[in-house]
Image (cartoon, rainbow, N blue to C red; front, side, top):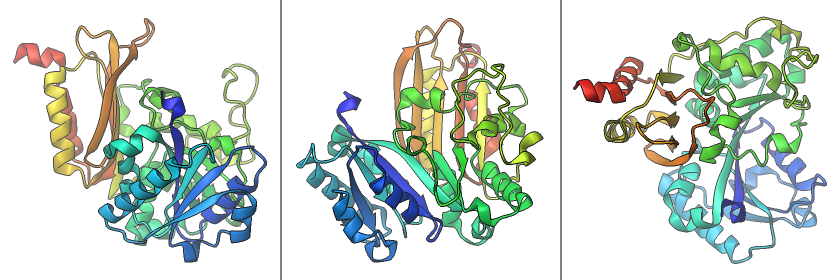
Length: 371
């Protein structure tokens, strides 16, 4: 069924980072796909209007208003209008310049039944400026939001910074969001398949997008494991399907500074927490708990996701959330070789790590029996 839904890619990032370059590339490249484009602050974005028409695209403008309801209302209205012209385009791009937070856009696809019936959120793509991001992260909370929210990050304009500067800005990104795919680009020159068709919000793809999502050591609180897969994400042309022992050096890219373990600069305000329990959790304890957590701390929790084992349940329970809004379901069976453990991840501001760990631990199926 989801194949029938129109994929929606949300593009975010600071003004000047290169979103327009990426957008124009998507619209002009010869990939045979047609896009409808939804922008806000249309006056500022500078999509070449002729280009948009030439490329047989249609551009819809959202009224600018950063209040969630305005954005949601606009988006629902526009997408419903688009759906009456189904067949004219293959995908939708939503460009969110001027929106401090991509959350209301993402939430629209969780909340509104009419929208989610026809369209599905594919990925949130953030374009960041390698030269100015470190400064932005110090003075602009929305820059952190955009990094924390992303499924894919294009660290753009890497040709304008030294290797030391590049290493620092990458370490800052990792400290905020170790789970996004990170690509280093110049003039947003990237294979479009690295940006489009990611299926990052498809619950069943959480594992494929993050191959290390369940391979976690006991020391997960020091975050190191979260960063290992970034080594080979820097070269988007690298064939990730080849096995690690295939003779290709997965680290041998133009940026030699990655020969050692990547540096992580933890952010005082925004961070990610990953918690693993061996074995199953009791759904009658876990579901009320996770709902309570996101209702209470939702404004500070930007993204949450998890894969859980329930007792006597052959299928995996997979969920993800944007602020207070959660979406979860039982999915495919656990494979025999998979370890039936339960793992959740939060990305957000001032997360109450100890409280989250203790709360999740209390949901363990064993804890239920003892209690």
